[in-house]
Length: 348
Length: 214
Image (cartoon, rainbow over all chains, first blue to last red; front, side):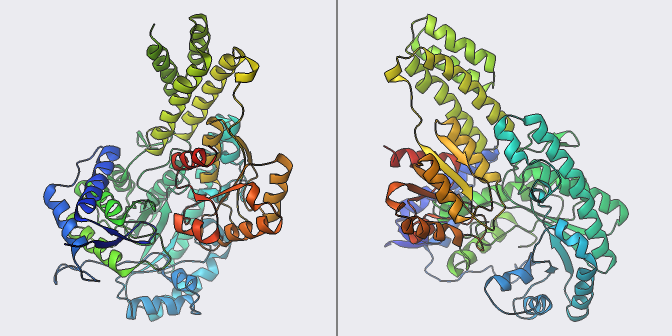
């Protein structure tokens, strides 16, 4: 066989030989296994990935009958990004009627719970109108985004400034206070949207600001589930491991910092999360085969221990999909097929 | 004690984030006739490099990294005092680091700043949401060797390109190394805008920077 056309994690096209391809697939799974202390992919699974990447088909998909749920986060914002002049409600209709979405998500352009709080009544109006013209389950989504609680955007001292000065106790205190405020905001906004008819709440990009960010999402979930036992809560993550910016925060006695996806999902289950969305970030300087093999290894370990549905994040820079505004279909379809068939996912 | 044992002990004090032990090993190694420069480079610097690797794997957390860097600084001060003036280590380079205007993300940039400092660079972190002019003013003021810009979003990434153009307009582009970072940056982006390199992670940034500054 001649050279195999594939891509770097940045999306840039690259050619590989068969041996280079297999080396990258093996190295990717070994990297994940080493970091996560989880099993690497088997020889059969690597051969399966090898066959996917050597296929000359531009687009690949799962066999008929093996399709899974296709959900989207921040859907209305993604059309805006491409400069398509369309209102959020129309975006949702496009996702439902043209893009095959099985769930929808309404979100504000700021996409964080804190800035939505003072305008929640206007968001409730948009949600109500959206519900009237769409059919799939409609989530309301935003990020915990603990960065917004530090000065100058929030009331608390900025840990990113305190930490380099060696003021570790003060930085940790600021994170802990931010958690308390973030939980209040998440619960306030989520309650308002749920009571207005949202079918679920999505806490997206959780953990982006480290262990405190994840803790805020878990605590908010606990409160929401106590208030509304039937509420569907999806938690989508920010990365394959929780950055330890505080370092000592725990949930039910488990330290959150450094947790990889297979441990993250267990915390989510304890908090009452309904759907978990693991994320494995791309290394743009490594090939897509390396990245996909790595992402599948982490995700498979997560699926194997999960007792709640797993909807893995696949898109710009996550889940084996290149870091480009418009992910190329050759890799996106290969990554999606492989994730579904190896990891036995519940949804994308 | 063999040289390698001294180096291993120095590494261990950093991994243990034990400042007192680091100072003690530094002082005792001098009494034992160890070369202070070797102790710095093969002992304490190696320790902080290992801490950086562990941080990137999620096995060490930011506060631990900060404490380890303080332990290293304290030990290196003792060793440097024993060096003749001509051998005392100069800063590897002066870096101005900031997040471009319109972008308020500073966690990753702060981590890079910390890692660069512990690897011997003089870092001027000018914060987030920083106007292009401020990058240039600061670089002139501190006679920077390197300007690093961070952008976390596609909507703010354009600031990194504007910075390149502004440096050319100011006649400074050939006098500094520029590096870009952030969730949406890639090698390809760095090439497209004329930046010298893309730093994917703290380790990647430090390795590439050391190549450029050779």
